[in-house]
Length: 224
Image (cartoon, rainbow, N blue to C red; front, top):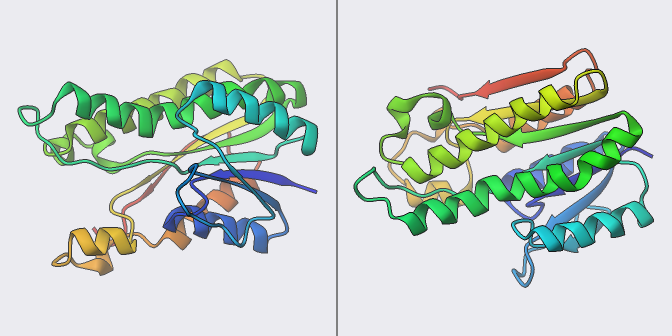
C-alpha cells in the first residue's frame, strides 16, 4: 500500500489532493487543525495535529511510524495569506506568516526526513506562491511572500541534502487558487484566470509518480 500524508486535508486544495491520490489507489492520511471542526471524509485516516508546533509533529511522527511504517509522499498544504506593504507590515504579521507557511512545512520535513533517509526514497511536496518568485507581485503581500520564499528555499536546500538518494522534492507555485474563500475576498476578480485546485493535485500526482523528476518547480499561473 502506497501512503501519502496530506496536511490541511480539510481545505479546498487539501481536499483536491486527498481525492486525487485516493482515486489513484493511495492510502491517504490527512492532518487537520486541532479543534477546527474541519473534516476530510475522503481520507482513509485523519489526525488533528498542529503542524506549526514542533513537539506536536514529533509526537505524530512516532505515531505514524508505529501505525503505517513507510511513507511515499508528504503534501504540505497548510498555509495562509495576508496583505500588507513594507510600511504596513508589523513584526507580528511576519511571525504569523512565518509560523503558518514556513514552520508548517519545516516541521514535517524535519520530522519525516529520517524515515525517508532510512527508506532511501520518498517525495516532499511543497506549496509556494508566485509573489515569492516575482517581486512585482510581492509589493502588497510582504509577510506572505517572504514566508513562501522561505518554503521554496527550504525545498532547494533539502534537495541538496538528499542528493545520492531517491528522495525527491518538488514545489508547486500557483498564482491565485480558485477557492470559495478567495472568491469571497475578491468578488470582482476574473475567476477564469485562477488555478483550479484539481490542477495542482494532478501536478502533484504526476510529480510523485515520475521518478525521473528529481527537483522541479511547477508554475501554475492559470490564465494570467
